[in-house]
Length: 265
Image 1 (tube, rainbow, N blue to C red):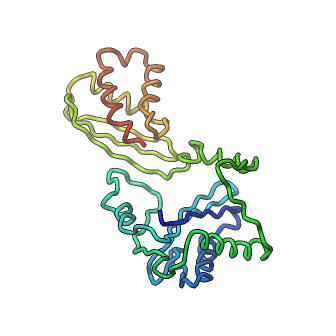
Image 2: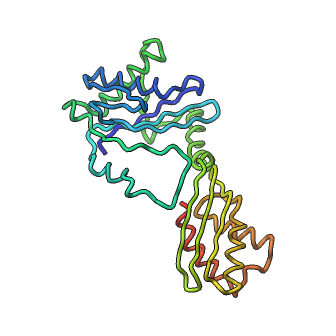
Image 3: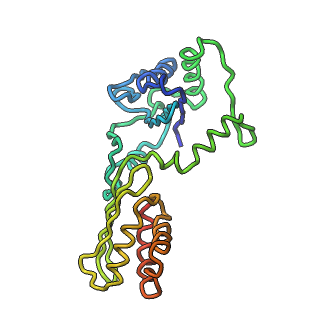
């Protein structure tokens, strides 16, 4: 893929975006690449961004996850990150990425590779956090047995709570034309839980359609924002109002599920 991926994992009280970026920047300087940290804590060379970062702070831990562009296809990368490809119906309160021109380290070094980058970052990490005393890096393979604590952390990183449970608040607005009417949908979610939902049709005249849309809207609240949300809502409706969903309107529920579920992933 032409890029290296790294993660700096540390106690929350020692975490600093600037400090971590400067550590990686010094590693590049050791490789004769004139890197520096800009005002946004991005690692750059000659005004071009060479590394992207994401951060997560939870409980007593902090994670700094980064990528380093070595020899990537920047044309494809720009296409993937372009705002033209943004899903326009989702509005988030999360920190939005600021578009920046990017470049590869290959433009500044003919010899740079993944191994060199890792070794240089390791050297700077040892200097900052291990008083310069050597550490023997551990190279993991699929057959490697992880320490118990590492296994516990790996399992935690795969849980729903870790992946979705701290998602910033966002809204999702969707609409679709059905044979029985045009439906407008609005969903608000925070920390992976639907806090507000409203599905309505301005031109549906049948009682079944109006009833199902109202029931789905109410039942979606407090459900997890996922592709299984409609199924969870239907279970709540069947438990709280038995018989509301029946043979006369279950087709409407199926149509709504086929439309909504893929848009909640």
